Amino acid sequence: MKKRALLVGTSYSAEPLLAALHALDLRVEVCGAHPDDPCVALADACHAIDYADREALLRVVADGGFD
Image (cartoon, rainbow, N blue to C red; front, side, top):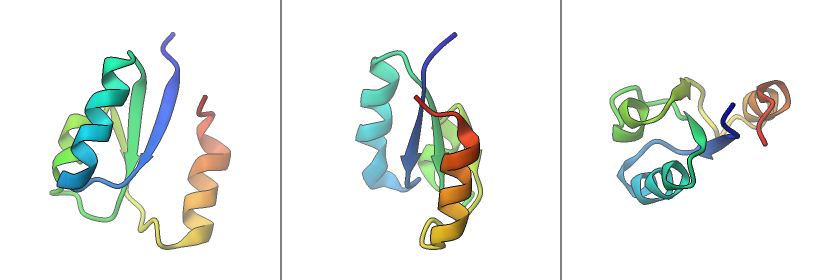
């Protein structure tokens, strides 16, 4: 089973980070509030939250089982 990482952000600026995490053979999940952002389509999973909402982000992290 692949290790899992959470990338906070889904915009064009996050694409190089997503590619680097995938190159490490990680399952990469992203979180962001814009479903049309490019990393949503490229990630293994997406958490549709506004990561400026501290409590929502902490729930994703706490419940996600990320490595």
